[in-house]
Figure 1: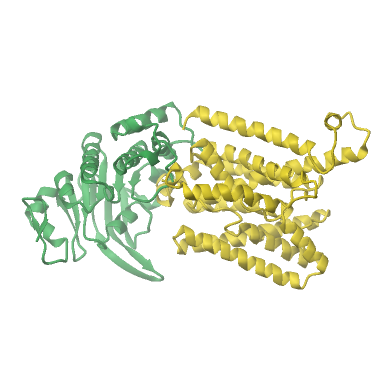
Figure 2: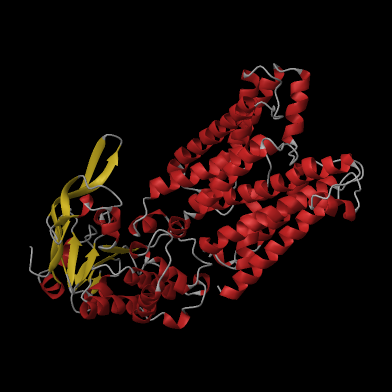
Length: 344
Length: 261
């Protein structure tokens, strides 16, 4: 793969990121003139205090939340696809997101609050929710590791992931049946997916964890590339395959759990974006794939956020948009697998 | 068994598989020796234990007993890094590397020698280039693995093992999916690597006649689970080849170097 293709693709993805972020700043349910937005951003202030609050406490946190969530889910998908040697793996299809969701539901019920993903402002409560999400995602990943050792077929592993999703959602439904009506409502709303759930005070934790996990994924480039050749070759190249796989799944679990706890179980981004990155770069080399996947993931999530807030009749749930973007990409990949290099 | 040029030796090596707490030994108390500069073919019928033996030698499976030594050091007790600089592998495993170029794939062979991020310096890049040239795949250096024929792909995998710069190369059925021309070409290449570069090359194969034509030594797994080793022409002459298959209706024919019935 040529170096110039990598440079150009990365620059295009970065420019798109800036444009989409600006668009998310300008468009929304309330029309705010560009001049006032510029005034608020440059610190000159604005006469309309409501606009200032909308920009600083709603739109900017949403942009950061969406961009990081997109990057996090996409890297999760990439790491799962390489680790399980399965191009159709992703955090939602393998049930990792629903595992995290179950963890969230259980913790909220145990804390005595209403059942739902709406995280309280008290530091203790949302850390508890995060821990719940992490444990839930961890349990699902452990189940997947166990099954992947027994069933060698990629398709079977995907089906096991889907079964795990059904199982967790049935447990959640059972929990719902003993929860308050408000709790059920909250939980359903959380399930729609939304990038407006991270407040300014929660942002450092949310952004900090995601940033650290993304950096950790970039430090795994060498074993990830070796794992493209399968476990036996990777071992022969000096990679401790079991340890590397556990680290990679830990990173995946952390990324998926944090995003799921704060934004709901968001589908398709993790599955589709690594393919967008591979197709646009024309390589499976992780040293180039990881930056491109982070940028493309942030782009797609911002695009979803933009569509979600620009509807004049109210906010569209994120999970109503991601399949519309994700499904055509997946179908394209399945239908063209003979022509796509990285399948062959 | 052990000679001056031997690099790898096994000592009472027993290999097989574990079935729960039960151990099923396929090959027992092997004392084998692999020599520098020699191409050795491991032959035997399906299920005889060829892959099991090779998986033990590449440390993918723990042997049931005994030890493997390379230059007097226990292979199983080496660090993974040291082992990756000692013994290179070529297998028929499916790889997801279609969207890597030949150069990128061969570059992965440098991993045992590169730093934490796996970046190649100018010396690594020169070794990668030389390995591709030696394996006869340099003409395809910039092409995707996906665009290669099976034979070219196997050359790229061999170049990758060469870039690893190990004194020993072990190949698990390297010619399994190849047509006759590519099979002979691959075997020739391996013979050159052994004779001219001094590598100890061990391969398992189903290709009896090509192995007999090109291998310096044979390791034959007989039907009674013995491993007979020796110089190819001697083993052919003393009738050892007739102990390879259980089927009584086929016999080895030394003039065509193959079986007939």
